[in-house]
Length: 313
Image (cartoon, rainbow, N blue to C red; front, side):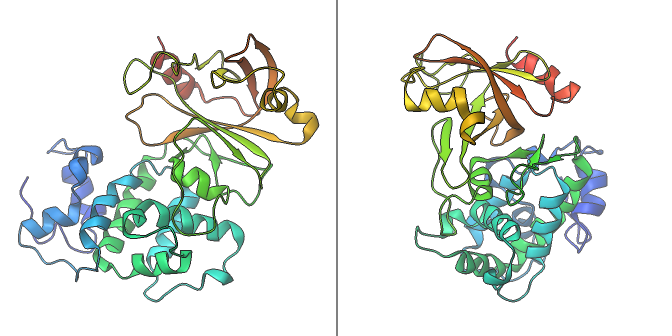
């Protein structure tokens, strides 16, 4: 791939990059370009082209650019780009809760490795803004991602302060950031498939459909799959009994005023999960684990259901 001065100019991603590199004569997809923690800015710099002055954590933040390749809804794209356009520090306190959570989703995704557990959101945002080349690349990348949106997300009406769109894709960092988990800029790790978001009174379930690859042990290969466009078969953790407080909450969440939110990905090598939206308990069989059938409030799009079916075929 030969880089030219025009390739790395103001509209390198949306112009020549999009037309010639991504899906064009080079046949190079975005995912290939950003493989192995390489960014477009790295390629420009290695070719001897001019890039903007580096920030204090330039390498770390450039490597994080590829973490946004899954972004596929206009709210995130527009808000993320707005935040990245700021030349001066943001006053986080003036932002509405939904906007503040979106900022944390962005900062937590890109600046994570350059922060510690005490870094405030305002400090994390300021650190991102001190890297003009990274901001420039991310703004252009988000513009390209806007052209790859496959589904029109359904607003999450039950939780208006949670900036998630049903049928869009999110990482665990974005999911927890959207639900306001934690108070600092850095989002704490979420390793298991279940998370009780106490303030939102919501159970968050993130599961992988195809468990033939990845680090799934025999005790964690739960049978999770789409029965139909509006029914999901899901298995709880292996220690959950039907009569336990957790098992009872699953069964009676509607009466208790709590919510169940489902997130699914096809394979373990996918960073992001599709947000399937709220679901309601239908029935369960057995325990340790409980095999629960959930009814989605919003049916899966046909293509997504087909992809889910293929993942477990």
